[in-house]
Length: 386
Image 1 (cartoon, helix red, strand yellow):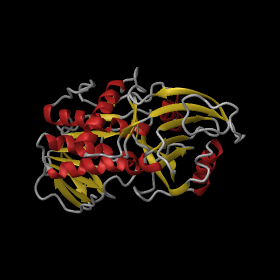
Image 2 (cartoon, rainbow, N blue to C red; image 1 turned 90 degrees about the vertical axis):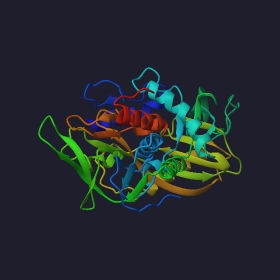
Image 3 (cartoon, rainbow, N blue to C red; image 1 turned 90 degrees about the horizontal axis):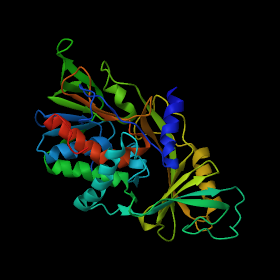
Image 4 (cartoon, rainbow, N blue to C red; image 1 turned 120 degrees about the horizontal axis):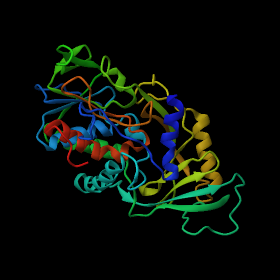
């Protein structure tokens, strides 16, 4: 059942164990791995990237650094789905021991470099703890050591990371900056609906020759599918696993001071809280089961019963946040394959077709190294950095 395996895999980061395996669909099956553009491709692009979320943006950015002529297509625009609404939590070593461990470590390193290069003021180091709580809402008899802002119903805590191993970035700022930097190097973009990949040739000699967008064909030599839970729209007829979406709701609250400790709660439904710069606090949790996504990107329904529960839960565990103003409620779908593993690499049996999707709750973390590896794979024929 995709519901059971993917739900478990997206919550497993809470316990500091393996988050995801990595499915790399290469021919050899080895690991080789504010923007609102509407313009159409001015000339025949070398590569068309389908999707302007953080994965597609990273692929386009790293290809542009190699001098590749890239064109991006996205139905809604830049960072309109999960890449604009996710928490942006980054962990150096939480994937150690899994196939994506090296990818995560490389990406964590690249995040700091990108923050410097692109001028991302939302990037910063912070600490992280797991804190056990009950529903009493009573002040703790004794303040827990190394706990910054949780003081009600606390039962115990465990340090999960320091400023050397934990960081954060606002995913929308990162995604928009990657696209803007790619555009400075000649990348173009349009808002349009990808309807499929044009494939020519007979079995054993098939190759991608274009992308169908809004009833017309954009001719190209290579195509990258990076459309998250909507990737199936571009993957018709291709040998790729189905993609699902797991809906998460989130709430943005405004605190008087800036907090610097992310918290994974144990109890009260296990919500997660990521403080951001300038007093903003991001609260998420209570995910739905993975489904085939029918909602359109940027048009996801926000259910008040879920966001109200998030708000009330945070107010039960922190006297500091009891009166914090709620500035926004939102929801998004994290992309997942049935077995919970990212799908990264060449599309089997079709020359010039590539895929990078299904990163789940680690999409923001692993985006930089995924884009770098994909650019190396496309340009050099093999990835060398990961």
